Length: 295
Image (cartoon, rainbow, N blue to C red; front, side, top):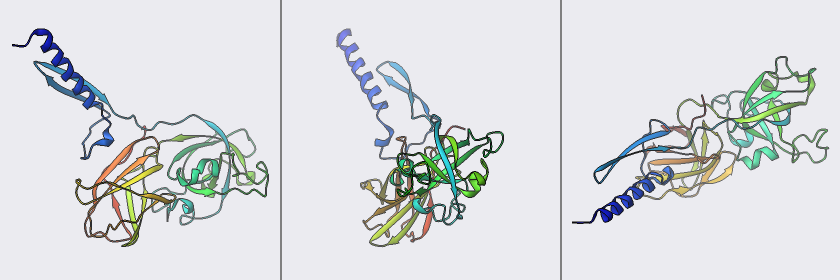
């Protein structure tokens, strides 16, 4: 018979092993796990004792701090306001006309496509709409630099300026068009989306582009992986081609596909078996899950 001290040591080691297993990151799991909340109440039996632990997942994406910037507006329509991000029609894709082209300092070579911002026109009583209305916009386009003009007189999107070139219908909600350029306060906010993440596959059997859209939470995707067939295969990374269009050279035709998406706040969402074996190019597939923000 083991001594009480040895039995106690074995129990302690087993308890530590259980705690370590519970704290392993979710993203290492190879199988989908159903969750009901961000706090999981876990019960494990260790020896003759029952151990109750609470494991806390990543919190929802929260609004960031207010910052100072400026805003202008540009003409266009639902088929052009999503140009640099690869959103073919911002209205049909659920973004509406409350969209913005970001200056180079904010756009970050397309990484901020899909991010959401709250904007207020400030410090301009003549041009700001009364009551300081707040506007939520999605980043869907790029405002390129114009180095032939000074940063404070026409070169509004030159680095290091943090500037929003708003779709004209959006600008009109917070300021008078005659103002042209107005000072604003802005902050990152969660993107609230209905339904799952969307994946639209275009290309040909030897080159595939996957457009990732309708992304909630942080909204901006930083990595995409695809799984061909069952979960015994390896996840294949996609490369950002431009905006939120991701490319892969591997042949995907005839394979059931799963996608794993990671956003800038480190959260990961896996859409299992979202495309059947007989999927076709130019089809859109809807994942079962999405990221969430604060209500």
